[in-house]
Image (cartoon, rainbow, N blue to C red; front, side, top):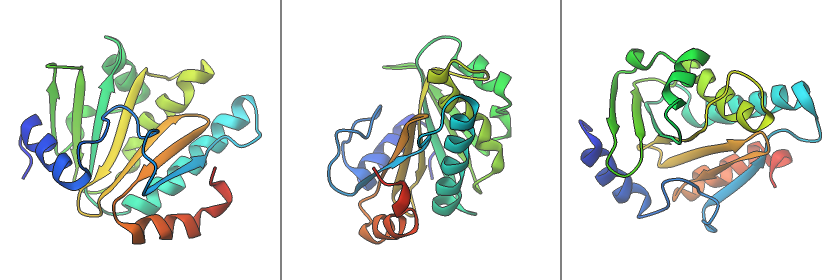
Length: 178
């Protein structure tokens, strides 16, 4: 049972090892990188990136408990997420860590459609569209041992020590692999 930052980070280390908490890009094994925006431009690119993100998230987290570990890179991050429609208080559990970085932890018992404001905010940020937020978010399922990091409209990284999960994702979404 995760009750605080220490519990979360301890379980994170047990499941995934001491990996980088702000990017999955340096990982080589058990990681997939997906193209999100394709060759589209402008609003069509944003739409495609959102659609692909949501399909992969739904596949990985459907009906499962999910944790979000969100690094808020500036003081407006949480305000921008709320403006985008994220209701932090609707999470089944949430807490913050201001020790090293400004990190917001959210837990939902079931993967909800309510996370679309987070996805949209990440994808819109580099495209200079609203709503947007300067954040890094890890979508995490500890039971399935999977982490997803949507880094912007270009793509997402998926990491899992579970080789079956990686192979299933690779087979299902092979057309989007980078």
